[in-house]
Image 1 (cartoon, rainbow, N blue to C red):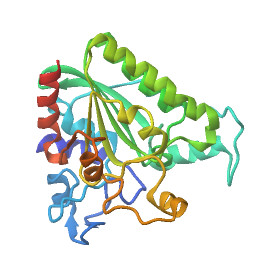
Image 2: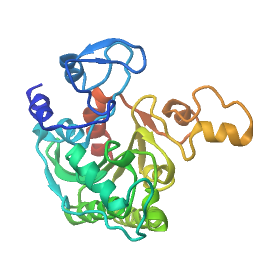
Image 3: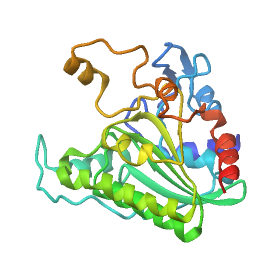
Image 4: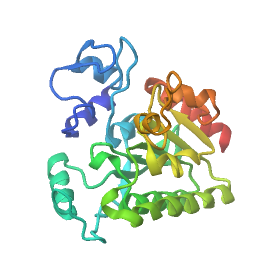
Length: 278
């Protein structure tokens, strides 16, 4: 699996669950001690229990695109500060600090490449950047990924990994829900396939917009998917929630998720699905 190892040295993160650092990591689910080589060979999933660690867009691109080759586009976009937002620090400072700490520019990356020789566009979110939250830049990147898909007449895959809308941008962030949904409708009008891949977590305004609008909604195992978190819902309705509530398996049983695919099978399964949808 040489193609995967080549991509690994460029990954930088401070999120303990986003591509683990060091030689050994502990599985958050079963507690198994896992060597870095084991995680690399299993695409950052636990070989004991199947737990899926969060990974960055780079790694998804590396094993989904042919030969791990892709070309990024619109990577120059940066967040503005339309509200002059300040909490414990002002918003521009928070963005700069996050960029410096993670080596990433935003919570979404767009790339083009091929899968089984056919053109493909992937837009992937990154929880390591302010919780993968969707602000104006993320919404614009999703919109531009849709435009690129139309220009190339190529299928679009959006990989969601987000806590929801970015509160620092207020209503500007919420507007991205309608903007991305409207843009994705253009794909349907042209008969271009769109697959939504939901990973852990896919929450808030993400699940309430483009994440649930795929021609096929696919998920990694045991991903948290929903709008409000289970604790908020439980505290609001004052009732216990069903076993596995808001996990991908529960949502598949109730018709919100079409298919659950282990990360090691993602490339093969997505290629098969796209071949049938073209």
